[in-house]
Picture 1: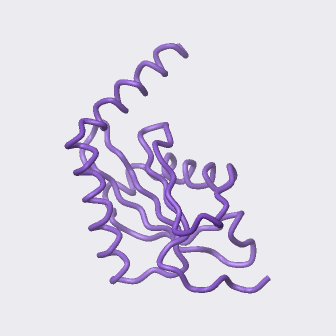
Picture 2: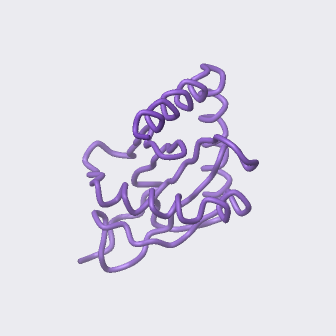
Length: 136
């Protein structure tokens, strides 16, 4: 399998504590499969505290639907580095660079601010809390 052509990014996720809030793609032809989402969610869950301390940052990971032959760079950022509720962003790209960190951080911050202005973060938090209360 050959390496795909360079792209700024392939796809990204917006994640609440336990919920995928949104998926965005650079091209309609990119397939985001459940395995990709599970890999990213598992990483976000297992490394939540580490990511809060290091974000914004890149980690190299295997993303099953894009390639099995090499690792992709995945950008992570969070809207809240303190204890409590916050949204997180994961963006899958081919390469990590300081330029992309800056670009993705600006994009994530704008996204967090826009969602906060629309009070969407509070709605997501309330819905997520209700969902987990019903499961108990």
